[in-house]
Image (cartoon, rainbow, N blue to C red; front, side, top):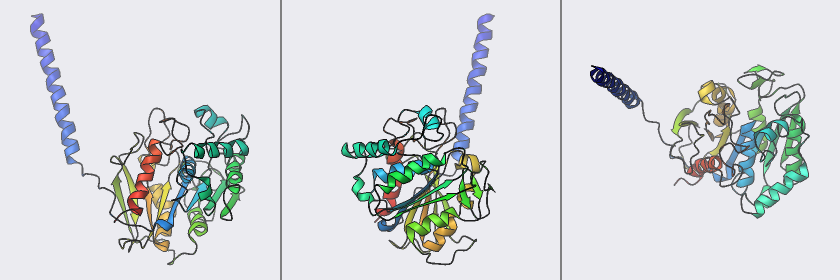
Length: 341
């Protein structure tokens, strides 16, 4: 009797398991495949990076790793290079907050020089002609303005004449916009601050010069998803899909430049949908400047609960070098566009 009961119970469990497998297969079969990156060739002389918070620090790492390829960066509330190699505690209390003191400019420059000497990043000599726009909020409680100032002072030793820094005195932590997002002084989702000016426009004006067309509120291009799972050296932390914006006319080889925008923590599409992408101001600038814009996406995980880019080593000890998984994945994205036939 007992054996019959156990047999029946196992049979029921097997049927339930089979039903679950079939259900999951049906769900996956019903999903549209994520398209690959479009085959568009961009002008390698107009390759720029921009980012907020963890995205700014990742863009900073990328700039140092491949300075011979990147022409300029716009960094909003960035932390210094190699500041968080001691892990998340250092990231929180020295590289964002300053309860353990302000990072040293000298130590930062030494880390850059040593990493370059070991071939972990590019030759700092290539930074001399770079264009660099730095922004910080005067009342930012997440990344203290004195921390961002270290980034400025470090770049001042490496860049000839292309450095521009701006502090919005009463701004919280976020990307400044003309009217979208929360009040300028606040620090809250979606981490865009209505400060009466566009950080996207200000940064790109410094990097890319004057616009080529009138800036309009209505976008004219296509926002498309792309598959991030197939990237070379792909990081486990990347979301399945990122987004790319193609302005009209950018299918013509070499006509348009390329901008990579890296979101901050808690700004990824799995949290905000397309809010950051559509309200940041970058799409309007893309149309006006003839720039393809790529918005890579990171996912939340146990070691990365807020969906930040890796700037403290949660995924790899090589996080801020050319060997870092996320660094390699992002590098492969822009090489796809700048090397496309």
